Length: 373
Image 1 (cartoon, one colour):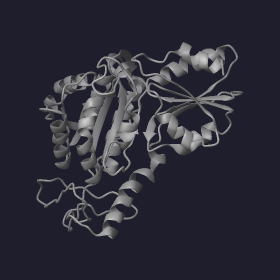
Image 2: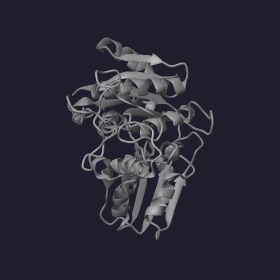
Image 3: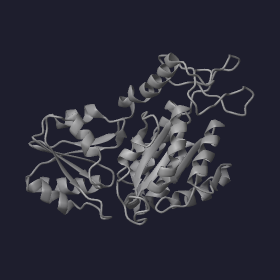
């Protein structure tokens, strides 16, 4: 049995290496910095680049440039850095630049508490771009998830040519644990589709069935136009309403129309359970413990752990809730994803347990809510 003792950030770094990441840029920020530290050790020996930008804006800009040149790229930060990333995230969405962004969330708002965890950026990751177009956000619960979902994040970024967030958390990222490598079933790796040689190249042309343009690197033998402004398939700026609308719809549809292909979750239904708990991230570990303890004393509770947060896996949530008389949502914030669930289940009363004080929600807190309802 191949066991390793490592923290969540190290698992992310190792997964990035396995996925083919060869460029990382970031700016030191607790609790994300050890991703940079790990990749500073791993990337140079394989010909990769790991560098510290002069600030967060420059760091994500370096990553976008590396990705446009054809490298698999990743950056990592926390809430204050995501704030600074916002304009470049919009650029990556609109100009279809693959990028993995690890957000090791800490307690906010603003500078907040650098050494305290929270899940306060859940809505910010989805809506923190101009235009409101969709992004993909994956949420690991433990070391195994941190590894596998990082690989999946790279695959999705390459497949859909878009930014993909890994919504980590200080408590997962900087807590050491053991991982059994024999139990890791790593997904097959995906690379972006290259444009066929010898044919005219339109950098943003996509067929109706494909939805995603073929890729050619900037700096290669074929001229590749790139712009952050509204553009047509040829990469030239346009003000044609029809072309603009077609592009916007395609950017939305390429992410949302195929969500079933990357809806990751754990479902633990129990016979006789009338209550369903819905949660995500590190809080899922406390929820698992609470549900197991209640089952042991004859009080079955079902559990749904979401690992794809955006786009919303509405069908999974609706199906899991169909037979439940009571629904309880757990979050390490004051209520963000719970409002998404309320929209999916408008006729249901949703109970909420949340806190944002720098402490983890404990199994005891969850048991108290579930037994006193």
